[in-house]
Image (cartoon, rainbow, N blue to C red; front, side, top):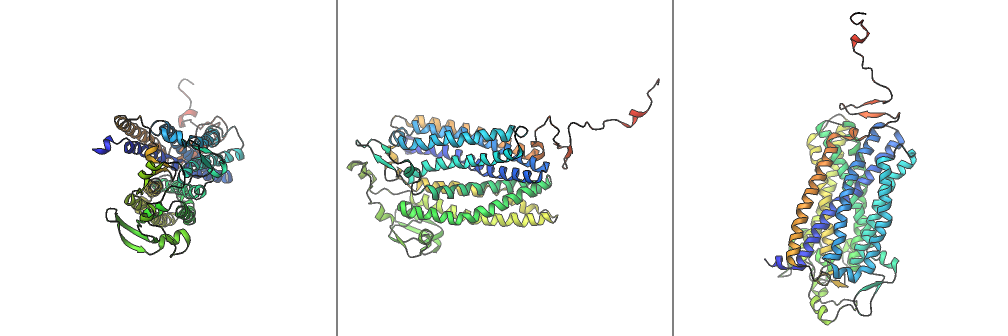
Length: 500
C-alpha cells in the first residue's frame, strides 16, 4: 500500500492519533472543572455534607482525567521535535512562546490549586477553598487559551516577519501574534463546546443514578446542574459559531468553500447533508438553504465568496517560497469531501444536543414528581457521546480545512515534516501508541467507572477532626461525628455476669 511508504501521510496519521486521544481528556477536564466549582459553590452556600461529597466526587474524576491529559500532551509536544522537526525549526521562535506561557502560568496555577482542592480542605478557610476550585477551572481555561493561541496562529499567522534567508518566521509583535484574527472566535467557540461536554457528563452520571434507583438526591442535583449549564452553553454556541464563521470567511476562504463543496464563485449555500464528487466538481446535497452559509458569515444571504476553482490559483501573500515550491502549491485545495462531511456532522450533532437537553429536562421534571422514567434517562446516559463527536468533527474541519498548509499561506505541510524519520519507524511508533493508549484508556475508564459506581458519598476522605463524615453503608448515608463512638453495647451487657 502506498500509504505505508508515505512518510508524510504516516506522520500526519500519527499526529492525528496523538491529538485525538489527547483531546478526549482535555475537553473533559475543562468541562468537569466547571462542574466541580459549581458543586463547591453549592456546598459553600448550603453547608450540606452531601454537597461536600459531590465536590470530592467530581474533583476525583477531574484529577484522574487531568493526569492523563497532561501525560498525552507531553507526547504531542515531543512530536514537534521528532516527526515535525522542520516545522519546529521554521516557527519555533513564535510557536514556543505560547507553549512556554501555558506551562509556566496556566499549568502551574491549575496544579497548585488542584492540590488544595484534593488535600487542603482542613487547612484553608472555606472561602479560600471555594476560590481554589474556581482557580482550578480558571487555570484549565487559561491553559486552553495559550494552546488555542498557538493553533490559531497556525490558522491565521500574524505579528511576525520572515528571516532574510527565508529559513524561519521571526516574532516581531507578541500581542499581534497572540491575538491574531482567529484567536478570540476560536477560543470562545472551542471552550464553550468543552463546557457543553462537561454539562452532558454531569447529566449522564445523574441519569445513571436515577435509572438505577441509587443516590437519588445526587442524581437529581447532577442532572439539574448539567441541564442548566447545558442550556446556557448550547444557546451561547450560536453567536460564538457566527464569530467563527465570520473569521473563516474573511481569513480562510478555501476552508469556507470546502465546508460546503463550493467550486464556483457566489453565495455559499447551507445544506443538511450531501456528498462531494471532487473528480467532477459536483456537490450533491439534500435540503439546501441557498446562501445559508453566507448568512452565517455576514448576515446576508447574497454575499458572494470565491469558490475552490478561483482559490486554487491563488498565490501566497508571503515571500517564503521560491517558484518551485509555489508550483507544488498551485492547484492544491483541502480534501473537500472530508471537510464537507465533518462540517455537516458537527452541525447535525448540534441540533441533536438540543434534543438531548429536552429529554433530560422532561426526565428531571418527572423525577421531581417521584416518577423515574428509565427510558429517558437511558438515553441521557449516552449523551456525552454527542458533544464529544461534535468537538472532534469541529477539529477535523479546522485542521483538514487549512490543507495543504501546516501554517496557512506560510508553510506547506509537506515542508514541515522531518526528513530523516522513515516510514518503518513511523509504523512501529503508531502501533506502539495504539497499544499504549488502549491500555491507558482502559485504566482511566476503570477508575472513573469505579468512582461513579461507588458514588459521591464514598468520595469523602476520612478526617481526624470533629467535622461530620459520611458513612456510605446504605443508599441513605448516616451522618455521625467521628469523635462520638457509637453505642456498641448489646442487650446483655448490663446483665450480671456469671460468678458476680
